[in-house]
Structure formats: structure tokens, C-alpha cells
Image (cartoon, rainbow, N blue to C red; front, side, top):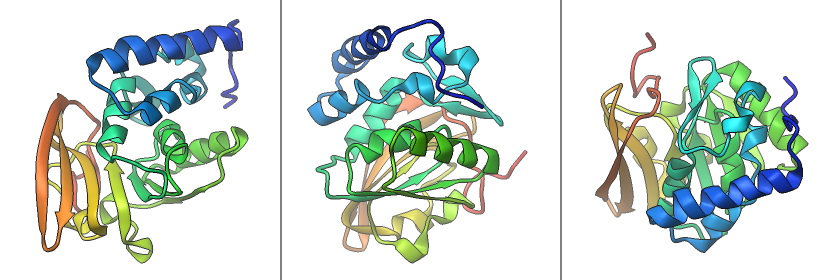
Amino acid sequence: MNRNHTNGKSDTDWEYERLSMVEDQLRKRGISDERVLHVMGKVPRHLFVPPESSNRAYTDGPLPLGEGQTVSQPYMVALMTQCLELTGAEKILEIGTGSGYQSAILMELVRELYTVERVHALAERAEQQLVTLGYHRFHLRVADGTQGWPEEAPFDGIIVTAGAPAVPDTLLNQLHENGTLVIPVGTRYSQKLCKCTKRGNTYRREEDTMCVFVPLVGEYGWEDE
């Protein structure tokens, strides 16, 4: 799939749409981390979605990706990224590579990214597009994301882009001290965004906004339907 599509728009047109998204969808709704806002205004989301959806790339909602998956709403991408409180020195684990858009956002903000995708076709497309756009500081593999990436643990932060029935201990156990796990938790059809921060042998859990993600399928998530 060729994702370098423009639909007749110039780079200036796309930049205007990104900056409008940042101001209208993100800043006005409480995204305050200037590094996150800058990157959201920089990364070309329209190159991470199917050609037929590119004209809606900067609208306020998720978009279908194929394989039963979606590209998350820009606000949710920004919110989850902000929850990690990144400084630039982190080693991060992403569960659910999907289109690679969230991966690109993270790579602009962290030292090193590890990302896991369950669907081989999505992983292949995402890797190709990330490399095409000049992103190289990532490690990607096709596997059950609910198991994390134990041989590379611990991580400073873990972000899960699918809804889980509960917070998997397998992921909590792969956090550094003071590390943060951001994950949607709830039913298959409705979740609440949770931020879990490791404190010794315990975890501080905070709940944020309601959200709807595709199910987190795997040994420590939902069964595949």
C-alpha cells in the first residue's frame, strides 16, 4: 500500500490541518505539555491512514485501519502520551503498533521505543512507513502484547493502545521504579483510561477519561472472537 498520498493537498494544506487540530482538539481540551503539542503538529497523521481516509486524518475521531483495528483519535494519542510525562531520556514499550502513528509520536519524544503488534500485516505496514519517514530508533516484533517484552524490561513507561478487562500484572512487573503504565480498562465496548505508577511493591492508580478502544487480545487480555 502506498501511503505517501496527498489527495491534491500541498504540504502547507496538511500543516494547516495539523496546527488547527492542535489548537482546536488538543490545547482547548487540556493538553498542556508543549513537547507533545509540538510533535502532534509535526507528525503527518495522513500518511499513517489508508488513502480513502486521509482527508479525515485530522478530524476529531478514530479512523478504520483494516484488520479490525483503528487509528486512535488525535486527542487520545496526545492524552496518553502526556500521561507518560516524558523528558526525552525514556525507554518505552508500546503495546499495539497499529498504523505506527503513535509510535512516531513517541519516537519524537523518547530515547528508545519497543513496540509489539499482534497482527503481522499491520506490523509490516507500520514498519515500512516508519522507516520511509526516517524513523529508526525502534524495535518492533509480532507477538502477544499482553506478555510485554520481558527480556528488554524494565521500561520507564508502557502505553497500551487497546482496551483491557483488567490491568495485566505482566506489564506492571516490567516497569522501572516510578515507571508509568497507561492503559484503557473496562469492557470490550467501553473503557476508562488508567494511569498506573510503580511505587516499590505497590502501584498508584489514577483514572482519567472514558474512552473506546479495540479489545486487547491475548493471554492476559480478551479472547479473540
